[in-house]
Structures are given as C-alpha cells and as structure tokens.
Amino acid sequence: MPGHVILSHGSDAGPDATKVSVLAKIAESMGWSAERPDYRADDALGHAGSIAPRIARLHERIAACAAPPVLVGSSMGSFVSGLASLELPVAGLFLLATPTLIPDNDLAFDVRLDVPTLLIHGWQDDVCPLDEIYEFAGRRQLPLLVLDDDHRLGAHIDAIG
Image (cartoon, rainbow, N blue to C red; front, side, top):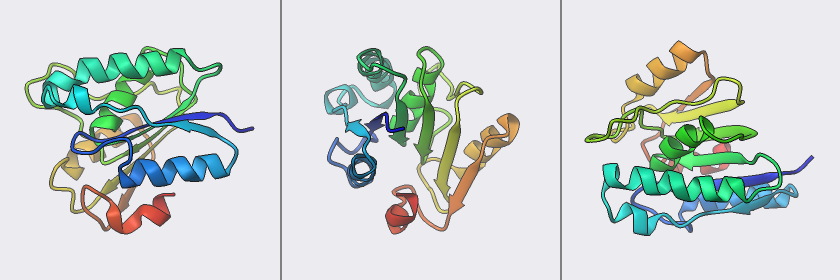
C-alpha cells in the first residue's frame, strides 16, 4: 500500500538534487506521495549549525503526515533523517552516503532499531568514510550496500532507484 516519502538532500545540494529528484519520481510512479524539503537556508549556518534547524524542519514535515512516512536522505539528509527517527514515528529509512559524525557537533548518527533501514555507501566516499558507517551498521546489524562509487553515488543512480 503506497504511503508518503520525505526526501532530504545533502548540504551542498537542494531539493532538485539528482538523487532525491530521481527517487521522488520513482516513488510517485509507484503511487506514493513525495516531498523534498528545502534545507538550503539551514545549510547557510554551516554543517554543525544546520543540524538542529534541519531536524526541526523534518519534524514539522513528519508531524504533518497522516501516517508515518519513509525517510530518504543523502549525506546530511541521511544524518538528520536517522536522528528524526529517534523522536517521531517513521515507516522506514533509506539512507545514502551517511556521515556518522559531524565536526563541531555533539550529536552522533543513530536510528531506531525497530524501523526498517537500508544504508547505501560508496567504496570511494572521501567525504563520509566507509569505515565509520560500516562499523555503525555492524554494531546494529543493519543492512549496508556498498557500491563501487564515490560520495555522490552518481554512477549508481539507476541501481539505487
């Protein structure tokens, strides 16, 4: 049964970024509703400064949903989606190129273990090291798909979709 998906872009992107745009179109083609919040004003505060406002914006969008949505995120969008899942009900998490830590910030990435989660990462990710998310996934026994790609996962957009 179709539901609603909220797709959160990374820090150096916007709601029209390639990954979130492609994934939104796929969700909509399957009968799901989709939205892509615009975090660019939050991102102007820097990586650490953008976390709280991004989470607040995501909480507003989740609270407006009739049923728990699926959260999709890329990079910083993944980080805040995981943290949002700790506080509000979500139906699932689909997280790409996830950082486990953001410098100058006290929050560490985490997810609710009772929420279906898939992590996707690139072997050559030089922005968010694979070792960190690999260790995180192992400690929580979460599925992690590692692709022969970099942080943008651009060579695998179709496969990810």
